[in-house]
Image (cartoon, rainbow, N blue to C red; front, side):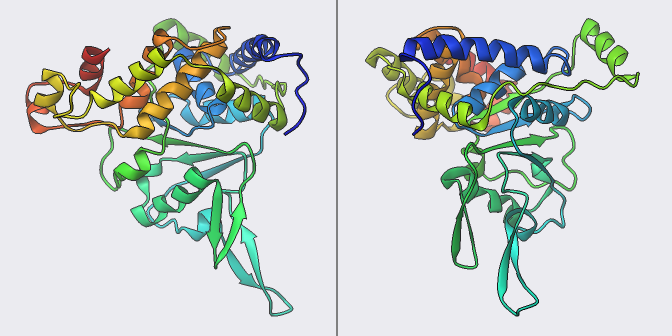
Length: 323
């Protein structure tokens, strides 16, 4: 690991806060509003996670991911998921060269930041091509294993309203996404600013705020942050309380949930809380930091039953009651 340019971890966290502020300022040159979405996306990046952005078309989900990769100075590839996309279109394939030797041609997955656009529009066979990359940061093709670049993130988008010709993501794949971020419509004033800035031929050139090496350094720094036992206990208790029939399950959970969050949720609650604390200039996370990241971490990991749907009890409402 490269030597730290800072005297100690406290100084490094202070530097991280300044870098984070510069980064949000730079992203704000292109993206109007969506502060919570940007914050959660950046927490994903510095927590070594992956992220699923859910929102109707036209809310600049693709532009946001493109802008973040630009400001971070990372290599970026966009994969448009379609019903006829094959796994080899993502990971690459072997071809026979002029010397009659097999040669592996790398697919678009070999970049720092991958935009999996409309990930639910392709069949499970192709969706599954991302699983190994997301978990192990490797790709196996024709019996050979290839390491992916570091840092590596998959940021996927999904349209929640159009269900025709879509394939819902399997639970195993959903669980690999750290955050499920809901992208909402902009406010009236924000939409005015968006229309004013995008209906002219102004072209914004972004500065690169961080290098890949700096991102890896800050990722490692966040992992090293100390956490008190009561915060870990709170996070694990919160994840456990989503499981119907468990010792911490509430009446709402027992009545309305079929499945709860697994251990990966507990891990992400702590890592997300560490990063949330760091961007706010704290040197260790507290329970408030766990609560701040709980909804996007738990939202896609718990499954409602028919009774919850009949009673109009949303997943967000259930998470709120647990917090």
